[in-house]
Image 1 (cartoon, rainbow, N blue to C red):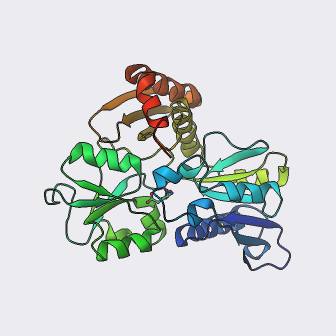
Image 2 (cartoon, rainbow, N blue to C red; image 1 turned 90 degrees about the horizontal axis):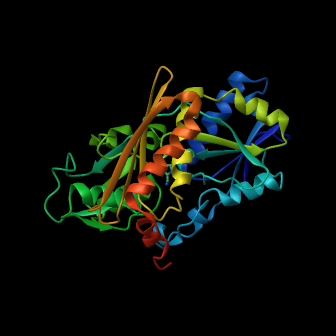
Length: 318
Ligand SMILES: NCc1[nH]cc(CCC(=O)O)c1CC(=O)O
């Protein structure tokens, strides 16, 4: 672990060490310095390795499980080695460890997935049977739904590693969160932005979540200055929807929510791994009822798909 700046910081932010995670932590430090009495050099950034960063040689769906990219950071929060964790909201499990809260969600970036390829301009443009790289079961299922002829290949690692894999011919194309590309100033590598009404993103995609100890009043107050209420309403709906479906990261689950005035709308999609079975539904309501809206969407999809459909994912070998 390394600590950047500040010999005696007033606040220590914990983050994963990827370029994307560091960019996100620095954005939070910058915004805290603008909106609170803290200055940038009073805020340290501590890099923490998570199991998701360490276990790189196995498919993500096998390593799976909740909190793969967050657990070690939460342990550091608990041990008071850090005071505030910055996460990609889509990596945060729907149930937090005892004593932790999410005091704020930052304004959401573009939620869409981006099609990235060296040779091809769009998903439709890929030749018959081409190799498509992704370790996300959601993206794999959604791609196979659109293009059953494609061959899904395992594709782990950070954005730079995945670009190298495209160069090496491991796959002809991949999908990456456009928000991540923008934060890395790499949005130019996106060849096509995917329509979220056809391929909805992962719940939480594109938003940053802050996590801290539930009894740390000062940090909660600082963190709340960064909260973006419309984003928070969408996160509440999307996270309750995911929880209602038991988002164990082994079921392909997607959601796309929008907010017009106080009217919150959420579209949910659940697929079989091969993309051949798809359940979709949508629910609208007042943003203040975000929790109920998310739960209702999960209940509708759950009853349409049936318990057996969800159990089939849990039983897959580890
Ligand atoms: N699972 C890894 C992960 N977690 C968050 C992002 C992107 C950034 C975001 O959604 O805010 C990514 C990479 C990707 O999906 O391309």
